[in-house]
Length: 172
Image: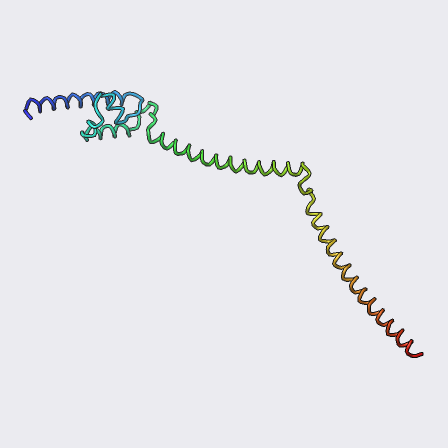
């Protein structure tokens, strides 16, 4: 390259640099969020220009992380918005889970109520009925046991009666 071309490129770079510094100063006085893309747009330069000039990029990052001056309302930073979004998404997940849990409980309750009202469901006093069934089954088992004992006694009495009748008949 010739020296005039080099000088022209240097002058163009200096003009761009001056535009970036002026745009950064304006952004610092404003309430907006300071970003590389926003600064490049305001200074009418490519973002790559800022990335090639590390000193300008460091100024942008320092300005973006600098707290607002006393008495000024803090600008919302990208990091705070991302944190708010992450918190909102997590809260949304918890609420969605709670809604599913409540919907399931409501469905079960409504299903049980419909089943009971239809007359197809078990009566409300099913435990009492179960106890009554158990008691009656026990009584039935006891009665069967007594019946078997009496049948055995009756069979023994008949056998004794047959023996006595046979003995009487043979003795004549």
